[in-house]
Image (cartoon, rainbow over all chains, first blue to last red; front, side, top):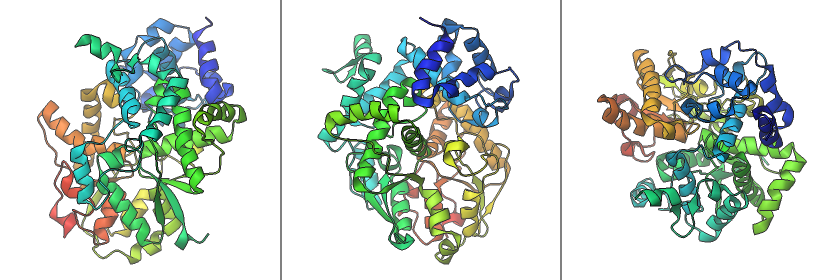
Length: 183
Length: 296
């Protein structure tokens, strides 16, 4: 295993380009990100500190920090960073690496369950179908939740990328293995 | 193709059709009123949420987004959206895939399993930008039958409408004017307020990670709008809508305070000013009641 920086550049680099990820090295700890952060107003999230920890290869500390998940990806710091550090994309990449190593809460895993079951993070139910009819729309929109063969395409993507394994999805129960075990 | 006959593939996403269909109804009616068609995207899924799936596994996020883009490509149409999350996800995926042949090849190897392909032939557009730039303020103004002259509006942009500005291309994210222009068309006044450009607090899995903390964030935003004298909030994002409207009921449970502060998607607000009823744009089904001055 390489350093956390190596992993960030490799994993995020494939999507965003390595140069994009290497901007992490440019952070000089000025703190403009932290001063701009709407989450940091209320939470322990200190973006400046996260990047210092990443530069110092503090993998376990970052992966176990609850505040890693308090960034709303608002991009305010991304827009304002005077050194051009691609902050939000770096945070998303660090989260990807944390999730791959099992640091993913049950509510966060459940979002994947909804998508695997319906194709939607927020599926429709009978009450909402009535709301649609009240404004003159078809009771169900023509999306993956309505068409099984379309949903199967989304499920196939999740299998191809092993997202189902990452969240411990049980295909027989169409739910989390972990959630079932807790009952 | 002239603007009078322009057709878009309407990407619904999750929250617009499945929680706030009034946003869908209002947007379709207004765009259609100006000769802009909105065609259904059969088999579209979650965009998927950029701060959520992008945070968990961007290598899953990307092919799911590419599949949605491919559906519009098969229709031969550009995409229009009513949620900043969908806008962020689809526009970013389109941008990344168009600029990286190797990445495109990898994604197409997955889509090819079920006979789909991302080609890079569509564009992703926000409905609010279509109103502003394609229809234009002058034409919108001609259809205003119920001016909002005495209404003070707190404009909320959300995040992914403007940012990252290098991808969105709507100018500076610090000094936007698109929604203010649309509010101005109705005769209403946009009021400045302390947390105007602040996030609603829902994105990036934050609402799911810690709902009370996320609600406190939203509470601060609402208080600053109310203190500035706003009668309502007007915005361009279905996901912000969920947080700001339904979140007020959750806020009451968590903190014991109910603001009853009206939240309107921009086409719901424009719809009222163009003579549509509260019921037609789905505002009667929301958490908060609408004051008389918005409905008269």
